Length: 165
Image 1 (cartoon, rainbow, N blue to C red):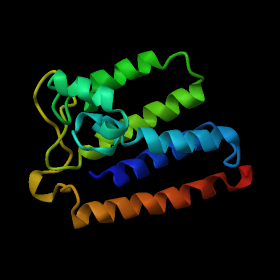
Image 2 (image 1 turned 180 degrees about the horizontal axis):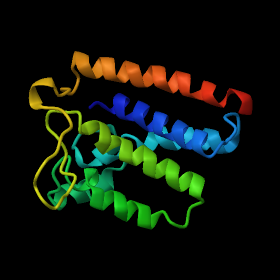
Image 3 (image 1 turned 120 degrees about the vertical axis):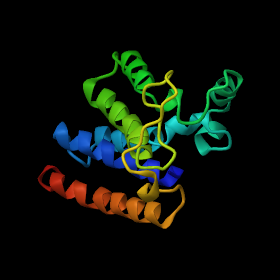
């Protein structure tokens, strides 16, 4: 999936956390959560040379390249998500779950892609939700439809918070 798709997925994940915590949408906390969702959603692609996240966090991307970490392995794995969760434990629950949900949205929607994800890395087996013939190719019409669905969801979800404006 493309960065803009992952950004929208991170945004939707952050909105879900805002709704769960019954946080007023028009607050600094919600604004921060939405920004975090947009930034953390595409973060797992730091392992892909040339991605926006790899360019922004170049030293970390270089380290992953030196360690020969392949795309959709370590940074897309359940192990990494658990380690991230452990590192973030000092954060307040609201921000902790915003980051975890936004980060988890990345491998979750990559499971719709034909290439799959090494969820159980360091085991090499890749998983995907859909059979290869109907899986969503990166940059395809199916991805555009999926991204549009995420955008509509991102617009509709705040109305669930309407009374907490």
